[in-house]
Length: 115
Length: 114
Image (cartoon, rainbow over all chains, first blue to last red; front, side):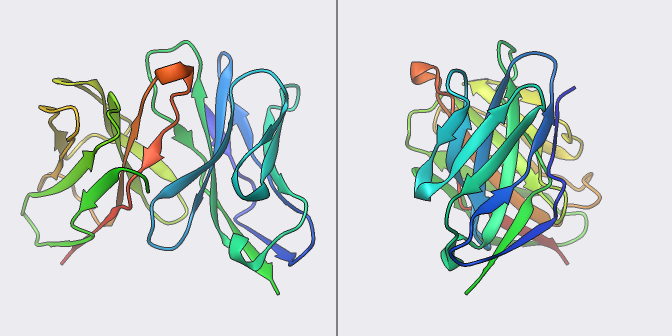
């Protein structure tokens, strides 16, 4: 079975400071990894994904994530946080080469950026 | 939210009543999904369909039913057998073109049991 853990329910950061939202995963096989963002009462918006290749993935709105196979992690990062980045962030995983294309999601991390 | 629409935005259900949530996509995606979101639990998969006239149960399918008669439509029925249906329901679709298979989500339907 595959699973995703987001160990922090909430992350607080000051505007202009770097931010990190943590994600670890557990799968049998090679993973596809995703980050999504959700604003209040809205659907999820795709930020970035890792399939294969370069371990540093760049995505929308200045976000990036680093895939670390040995630590089974896929942390989301941004060099300089904006107040508008405040939202709920979800990490998700799917195993390559399986019939099931649905994603397994973490429980989410609420990012609060203070002005 | 791309080319995926969900209706209604808010839905209220009485005890013992079946309700149907609509999901339509104009992205020509072959696969569609239904997830349920509860506070602090992330998203959980209810049903998914990878092709027209075929669908599979997800992790929490009990008390729900779906159909996939058209490529662009994947309605979800919440039956009276679902004991705790109050939640935010999200529909998604994906396409394997280029091997990308990224899921895109609709705006969601919030269901409340009265």
